[in-house]
Amino acid sequence: IPFSSALDSLFMDETVSVPLLFRLSDMAEADFALFKERWPAVDDSRRRVIVRHLVDISEENYVVNFSPVFAFCFDDALPAVRVAALDGLWDQTNLRLVGPIITLLQQDESVEVQAAAASALAHFILMAEWGEIPRTMSPRIVEALLTAYDGVDTAVPVKRAALEALGAADHPRIATLIQEAYAGNDPDMRLSAVFAMGSSADERWIPDLLVAMRSEDANMRVEAARAAGSIGHEDALPTLAHLAVEEDLEIALTVVEALGNIGSEKAHKMLVQMGEDEHFARLHEAVAEALEEMDWIGGELEMLDFSGSDFDDEELIA
Image (cartoon, rainbow, N blue to C red; front, side, top):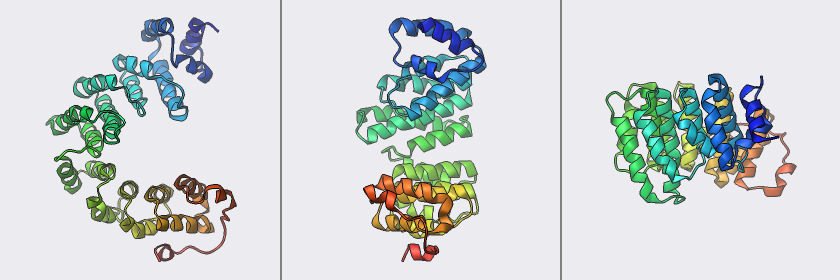
């Protein structure tokens, strides 16, 4: 159907047609101009739903390119739309987006948008550290995040997002900021400090994470297990084995994820044992996926027998 008719349907039909949303990927110049002309008149709730759908599609489909739409929506009147647009940039390497994102971090009136902007900048820090974009981009981003973090009036959600984003940065202040936040009294900031520990991939944090994985706070145990997996040190395996037997499904799934990320021979053995124990039946699908991602058993994955011996967390670390 003509592009104008597709917009009519997307903007005015009772439900949003997911197939038609693909028409917003890689739009021709004239089509994008028409989209931008009509977008401000679309109902607030419909704009939010459309952009959130685009984010979901981009997470599942690596061929689509909605980044021009997301960038255009940085100026949307609705904060929820701006947040969704920022969330959609999780895999972008377009350096021209960095400046506008920093502007949102520094100037947007919405705390939610500022926090989303800080989170979006985390991706560019990682890209710089991995050499996928010029490392010369990193100082500008890090400075903007540090300024936000240091701000006296900066809201806690923004501080959290900034600290989490800074975790992967190569900057002399980061370790101190993480340690101070972890030693503080704000439970949310402590969670973000643990997240940043994982992002840093620095083994210095393993002793702190071993303690955090035995916290009475389930959220802390989850975050610490995830961070330990990101760092990938085998010293975390005994404590992860202890967590694996918890009834809390989120914690158990995080253990599986962490073991897959550690990826060592011993971590592989632990996953295989879990996959062979009916006590972990609820985790078998996640275990199989983790083993496949580790590429330890390759084509033999389908031959795994998810039945057998009883599980003992002591056995896992033998």
